[in-house]
Amino acid sequence: MEIKRKKTVYWILQFLGWFLYGALLYLAAMKTNGIVKGTVLTNLIFSVGLGIFFSNQLRLFFLRKNYFHFNGGILAIRIFAATFIVSVLYTLIAKLFASILYQSFTDWKSLSLFLNVISIFVVFILWCTIYFTFLLFEESRKKEINNILLTKTQIELELQNLRSQLNPHFLFNSLNAIRALVETEPDKAKAAINLLSNLLRSTLKLNGVKLVSVEKELELVDAYLQLEKIRFEERLEITHEIGEACNQIMIPSFTIQTLVENSIKHGISKLIQGGKISISVERINNHFEIRVINSGKLEDKIDLGIGLSNLKKRLGLQYKSDFSFDIVEINETVEVTIVLPINLSGEELLLN
Image (cartoon, rainbow, N blue to C red):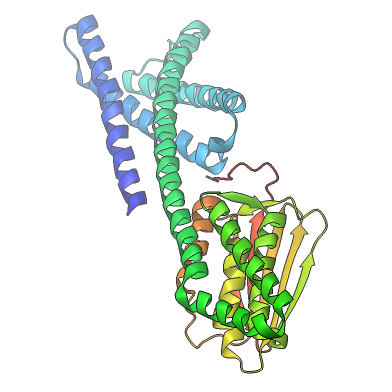
């Protein structure tokens, strides 16, 4: 619907702009000749139609060559070059049509042709300026909307994780596990209380932080899993496989935590015998892969739930098409894989 609206607006402005150009030519012809003859009017209509055709070809050419993603200097040079070529073609075709229409082939002097090329070149440059200004305005508006949606989605995700950490069921199970250790294993009980305290503190500290390093994210995940291991004891097995140079890669906060928490809630907690959670982060060229595998099965109808749905939506807003999110069942294990572009700068990657 949005694409259709943009095309409609484009063609309305296209015809309106060239109609104004034709009107100016008509007024100039009237001022020069007093009366505009049919042949002159025909030539004007042909010139306007030719302008609409070539300006639209310029637009299609820019789209095919992806000119909108070049920096300002390169973009300006390429626009000038493409526009000059179009201006030459326009002049030659318009001149040939006028010669046939007026049955006169005498006005083909170099200076006259050059001046005609320059004049229509100015018109096409003006067209390009208006067109690219409109595009920049649209892109700016789109980025602003995406930033607002990204912030909103992030807040929802962070609040969801915070609620998950603080919900009564989670606290009840954790405190029950700690209470069972108080008399028999007081040292473990103290360690569990410290883990719970640190986990809640870390969660509150990350609230509002958009990007964290893989290393910091895994610290939060490890604290969460250690606490869960007190509850599941030997029924929970945890393995890590973090690739070299992956620790400092920046990722959206709570990404791995959301995947792990989902594995516990929808996988391990439903298995009487417990199971295994495997976390891996691996670099692949200019991207890196986060994979969380847990024992369990997918339901017949895959429901990502609030946590994973919000995470996928957030990644889509931030990385556009430059990410992948897959969830599959393989040999009674559920595997969630996310592939993201590498970011070491700590600045958000908002791709166009």
